[in-house]
Each structure stands twice: as structure tokens, then as C-alpha cells.
Length: 189
Image 1 (cartoon, rainbow, N blue to C red):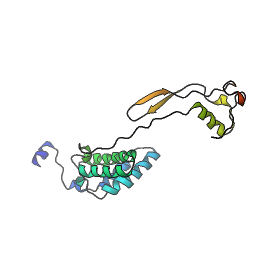
Image 2 (image 1 turned 120 degrees about the horizontal axis):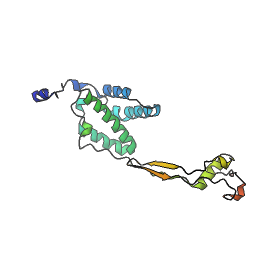
Image 3 (image 1 turned 90 degrees about the vertical axis):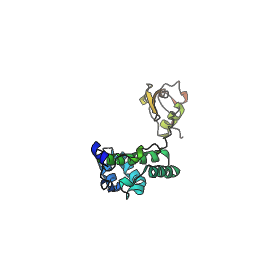
Image 4 (image 1 turned 45 degrees about the vertical axis):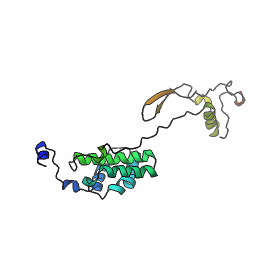
């Protein structure tokens, strides 16, 4: 205790008795985000984080409690829910450290392992499927469909790749002679 005081690192144990739920509410209010993210964070906080840690003093939360909670969530929810809830827990406990309620966040422990989000490959629709989609919504003038070949960004959480987008829809009569010039047939999926 005296050594911590000399280094300026002493934290009064009574300060850590503040309930996690109080800091969690403060952390949520302090976040600047769009409305859809706000709804997601509030939902993750209420259902997963506050439900488990809300009534505990922040100083009572241990790394083993966090890992046990992650294991429990991982058995019931997908990785994106687990990592989103963990992100919120980590933010609240970082606030507790910044406000000098605790000395170190238990989420920083080497025993805390959060499952990685699995990247999903984005597969572009075929030209035929795009034709069917446009055709299924009513007859449209194909000349209004973009004729350039843009670049599509594919994000897979570990890197961002730029790949050519699918071939543009051709609007000449040679591409689909049975439909007539500049028209795409109205077909169902």
C-alpha cells in the first residue's frame, strides 16, 4: 500500500465498491454512435453484460469470472454476440480504470480468450440472377442499368480486398434476343 502511494498508483479499496451497473450506464451514455449501433449496444449490455455483472462491485470482477462468462455465452450464442458483449464489458472496465475505481481491468488478463468472428465470403450474384431479379420486379429498360464494371470492396475482418464486381448487364439485343432491344423479360425467381 505504501509503495503504491509513493508511486501514485494507490486506489482506495472502498472506491472499487461502486456497482458495475452504475459504471455501465455511464459508459453507454458516453458513447457516440449511430441509432442502430446504440440499439445493438444497449441490447447486448442489458441482456448479456448487465445481467451477469450489473450488481457486482467492479473490484470484485475477476479474470476467471470474465472467462467463465465468455464460455457460457459461447455455448449459447454466435461469436459476433460474444465479441460484441465482451467489447462492452471491456469498455466499462476501461472506464473503471480511467476513473480509478480499479487498478487493472480483468479483461486484459492472459487467461481471457474471446472467440474470433468468422469471416464470411461475399459471393457476387451471377449475371443471370441479376437479370432475373430485375425482371421479377417488373419490366425495366436495361439501358438504365449501370454498364461500367465497378470495383467491390470485400471485408473479412482480417483484411480488405478489392475485387472486380460481376459483369454488367448487357443491354443490346444480341445478349438476349428473345427479349427485344433494351428490354429485360419479366420473369419470376
